Length: 454
Image 1 (spheres, helix red, strand yellow):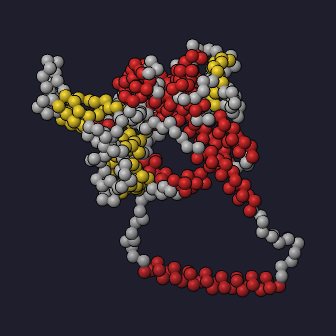
Image 2 (cartoon, rainbow, N blue to C red):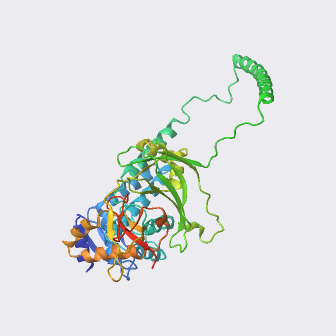
Image 3 (spheres, one colour):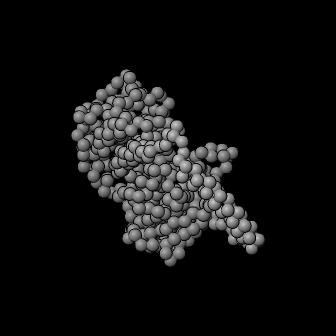
């Protein structure tokens, strides 16, 4: 059964179906081997659905992660003394797993079931994986980030992760090795050699000149302090964040509104949104960074900050204070500097998608009569591409109802983690009960909330 399911999913992902084997020595599934890859499964009953496990491992195979991992391991062995290489390698490992998780969700995997399964597997001991192997559950820190991304349905799925990180790993090692090679190339005087007479004269002259300069500096400083006004201008606060909002065509968007929302996953009563800023004619904005979460609050680690960006004639988009802060702050190390040099990003650019097709409908009561004056708002949405095209693709393989049902169940069972209803586009039904929602964005499945009297 596992081998047959692997063949069907491999055909869906356009890869050669590997052999599926079970081992009593494994605690979690993994993909092993380069020339003849094999999907290894534990003999015990898995906490994850078999389909999700196979999709995850086949995604590694499709992306050739085994070969890239081998290249990274060789780079780590060659430049073992470079901490930058180890940092980049860990980030690459995390990115690989996150992209394969997105494959699972995009192909119909239930977010909640998948996240809980990963946590249950993590409770077991992780097996040692070779340089060419790709395990499904990795370090605890990476796992925490993965689970957070899986349950966050507000972000866009990404089944493409550039291998730029691999290039940066190798480049970081080469740059570090080159820098080490230049250290100490200059000649160093011997401690046994006495200083030359000219050097002694120069040192005395420099000392006398230095004393004169110090006296002059002290005199000028005292004069400037006496003339300095008492009401000196205050410096710009460090907590000011700024950026630019652009449209799908790359042009600045004026009048875009940035709302800040803070909540936890499955928060029963999320905080109401707060309008932070509105972009000017040049599409730019600036606002004071929201205060951090108090560490004494229960489960403070699970809070997430989101900024929803909306504008008439454009679809909505998400960003966060952390993303804006990282884009405007100085590079945090060589990796960040290299990434900014490659992308050319010097400030946070939030790109709004096209407005997309409006969502139209008609609201009637149990007697078939139109309901007028009801508010129709977006409670949640799924930004996972065109669902109809994916359903048609899977229908040919006989699994359309399974995929569509899983996606709809995932959407309906989601507790509103953010109060999007007060921020995203809304509408009011007319006398005939009809409504129209605009500026949603292309290829988005929305869950509507209808509120009205009676």
